[in-house]
Amino acid sequence: MKLHVWSQFLGLQIIGSKFLRQWLEFTVLLVCLQEKRSSFPRFYFIGDDDLLEILGQSTNPAVIQTHLKKLFAGIHSVEFDSGQTTITAMKSLDGEVVPLINQVKVTSQVEVSLSLV
Image (tube, one colour):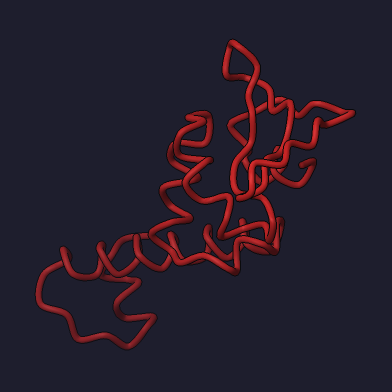
């Protein structure tokens, strides 16, 4: 659907299509974030910027580490295997380590990986 049709449909009086394109992209982004939050409710505890960082760098262990304490009470960090592809244990702020019986493979669908922790 062309942008001018969208502007007519939405009743918008817009000069040029740049603003409308940005508005539509922002709306689509918000819908995507809402879908991710619906699939993993702990994402409601973090802001849009943090969620975008997690989703954009979902296979980067350092990024996951920085946001864990916002997502899970009592988990300060996690331990990874030598290849940084599997979560092997959880750590508390006090240094207590709890090994995972079922290790969690880090995938690009971070909401699936984190739901298994």
